[in-house]
Length: 125
Image (cartoon, rainbow, N blue to C red; front, side, top):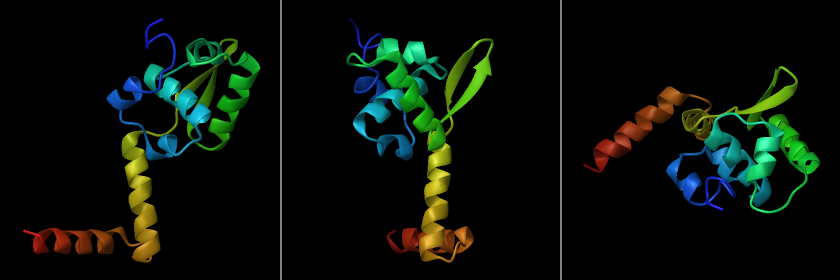
């Protein structure tokens, strides 16, 4: 079985830039989120067919729902099946990280954080 068919982590994850929230997940959740990100949209059955080891469809659905609750994935009803989609992009993840950084160190001011970063970049030239 080739990598596209079974187990979407590894080389596939390296080819696509995943949000850091996905990379911080536990291994099984990360694998499932990576499969959805790789396919861009997937049913629970499509994810079940691609996980690296035998996992029941019910267990995959449970993990997909946890990832929806965490804001990693979103779910839409299409005809009679739920379709899971990435809720975050790599760009969204970077913006959230910058906002957290500004909140933690600059009282929430992204402008102030950017000014300091620009100063530091110029100081290193």
